[in-house]
Image (tube, rainbow, N blue to C red; front, top):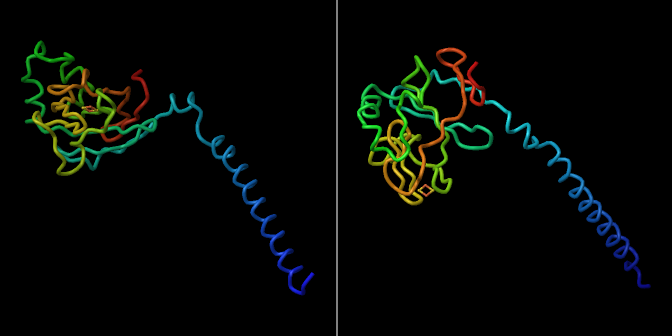
Length: 181
Ligand code: FES
């Protein structure tokens, strides 16, 4: 064996051992991480608390609820009027704004940010985003237009944006995922 070859071989063995340990380490890490993720049951019952005090009339925010986008919008009196002026029997998924909001908080529209066609995230909650032909939300994937009550008005989506269960715990705080008492 030439001088130096033994050292090189040892280096190689050590490197090989280290990388084997590295692989084993990674293999252990993955089950640990997946154990840390909430189970489906836990996720299905989870709630999200939101402070809505900073949302001005005409503004909306995007939040996350059970790993899905959620929109909270503070409707202006004009947007409320627009929603209320629509004859219900002309709607694809007939619902009044009143039915889609909470008593005493008719200006707060809380919906999932998931288009009911194929699940894209509609535009309209972010500042300056396209709100579509009816001033609510617009899904650019295939052109669904939702109105200021989050109701489907034009395009392929079959249903209004889903209103999740939620409660007002004060005038400025919501708990999404909690059923009304
Ligand atoms: S996913 Fe929204 S229009 Fe198709």
